[in-house]
Amino acid sequence: MSPAELDTHAITVHLDRLLTERDMTLTELADRVGVTVVNLSILKNGRARAIRFTTLTKLCDVLDCQPGDLLGYHRAEER
Image 1 (tube, helix red, strand yellow):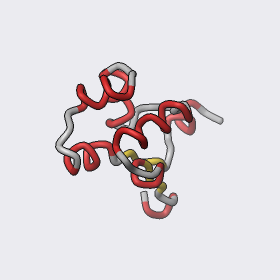
Image 2: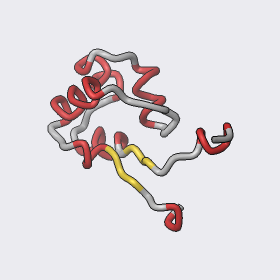
Image 3: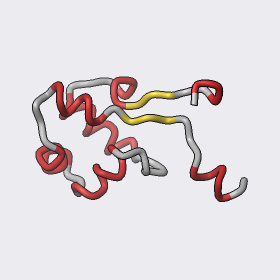
Image 4: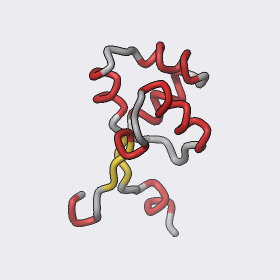
């Protein structure tokens, strides 16, 4: 794969929506999940290349959601 292909992915993160729905700040979420605000910001802005299942689990616990509520997939023809 070329570097351009590695940077392109079809996963979207709905962290903004979930935070708004729960009236929670990114800083509060970071504290409750145990990750840095910087790392959550990278995830929120769609620049993350990976997420640990342990982090995903903590996010789902704190946000009271399912992984599918947090992440979305868009087919190539939808992008």
